[in-house]
Amino acid sequence: MDMEKMVNLCKQYGFIFQGSEIYGGLANTWDYGPLGSRLKNNVKDAWRKKFIQERDNAYELDADILMHPMVWKASGHVDSFADPLIDCRECKTRHRADNLINDFSNSSIGDAMTNEEMIRYINENKVPCPKCGKTNFTDIRQFKLMFETYRGVTQDSKSVVYLRPENAQGEYVNFLNVQRSMRAKLPFSIGQIGKAFRNEITPGNFTFRTIEFEQMEYQTFCKKGDDMNLYEYFKQYGKKFYMDLGIKEEHLRFHDHEKLAHYAKAACDIEYKFPFGWGEVNGTHNRTDFDLTRHQEYSGVKQEYLDPDTNTKYIPYIIESTYGLDRTVLALLFEAYEVVDDREVLKLHPYLAPYKVAVLPLIKKNHSEKAKEIYQLLSKNFMTNYDEAGNIGKRYRRNDVIGTPFCVTIDDETINNNTVTIRERDTMEQTTINVSELVDYIEKRIKF
Image (cartoon, rainbow, N blue to C red):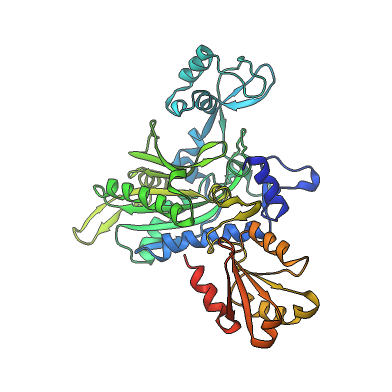
């Protein structure tokens, strides 16, 4: 399936809509519809289960989007968070220089280049503009990625605040609060799901790169010396998480960074094979003690941990593992979509499916009343779809394409014997069971 068809499918079935569509849309903003919002929330719940609930010494946080501007000064974002942008003099389009080089070379060599090296490569290799095909670019300019706004009634430098470009700093500035209130011992983790904002000039590929997005952040605080083992562990843990969600191993790969950020000891992405190529869905980084050291320096508040075993104080190292929620949802949609004998099926893991079950009266006139009773029963336990329009075959197909794993058909046997026919999405197998067994039957098959 190509990207255009995915965009149309998402709109047709209520997964994702263009933002502000009735006004012509706002470029690269997207609204999640009734099914998309459920899918997105189910991915969040799956992440919470694997990263918070099932792990020892893991705690969830919900930090504010707006933070003290000194947070972003300490983190380095105010001074250095920018993209290397280049303009085509012929067609006036704007591009990221490193992306132009990576796409042209079918590699990631642009990631490790300086501005001067990128310009030289583009000119020597006559890298073409993706729109007009000519090679006539301006010099590279650094474009700031943080959104600025103002707090209060006056717009001056003292009132500037930023929309956060990442969630991680909320976890770092609350390191001591979480450690003390939870009496946490190293290593322990802080996780957070939340919105972030980046003033991207070259967004695209549907929800892959947008100006507003959600991250599932995970920071593990540890003792120096334990850091690389934890780094390797979370690389593999992240890959297994995606495979547990239903993504095939051959559609995932690790991409180790050739050029490391100044604070990083090691960095690796997990990439998914999208129709447009490999794209990052996760980043795992060994950030050393950089972040807490910087916040200690800029705030004047000690960020040290008192080790109860050695009675010594030190600033912990941090292993970060960040999951792009919107990109993960997009990857899952591509991974799940199949056409089987002209039947469109979204083979989502049952735990992730927006609706777990659909209730279908065989004949509207005869079976709707009983079907609505069963719908009420099931909707107390699961997100349940009710569909009585059209023939039963069309209703099966409608639920297949939105990923509903089970369809329950109500017929004369339901009224006479209290039994229903339950059909499975992937195999199309049908089983007759008693209504009293329905909830237990479905619960056992949607576990994650």
